[in-house]
Image 1 (cartoon, rainbow, N blue to C red):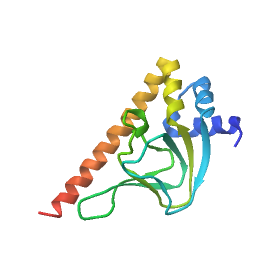
Image 2 (image 1 turned 45 degrees about the vertical axis):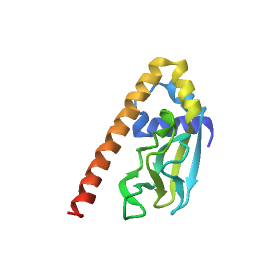
Image 3 (image 1 turned 135 degrees about the vertical axis):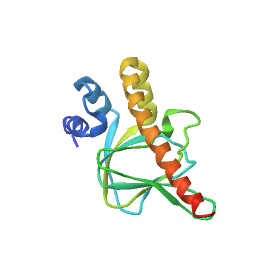
Amino acid sequence: MTENNLVKALAEHEFFADLSAESLTALASIAEVIEVEPHTMIFEEGGHADAAYAIVDGSVALEMNMAHRAHHIVQTLHRGEMLGWGWLFPPHRWAFSALVLDTTQLIRFDGEKMRSLWDEDREFGYEMMKRFAHVMTDRLAATRLQLVDFYADRY
């Protein structure tokens, strides 16, 4: 995908709505489009977190290890959603595992380069942190609901 096409794809993605052309171009410079086949693990809970992913098409299950279940789905993500925030803060570890459910197209952003972009342009960084804070809040709410269901079954 050319950089112009990548900028266009970012502009059409819900997470990046209303960002300036300059910001979209900067993001495109550190991104790559990847296609992942079903039943592929993008990353595993506890592993080194080094990237963020924008889901362009397809679906991904976020899973966590639970006491008596190998993996428990916390949330299923689809087109227009973001995947991964562990790269934001040390020690840069994934909080969940991410399993591709069907053929999925992703835009992958290098986490270290993303942090550098944000450091260079603090206003842009602040805007992106607000957006990722929303993603983290959503994940925590979904996890809470799953834990309530999980433990309700045990009592």
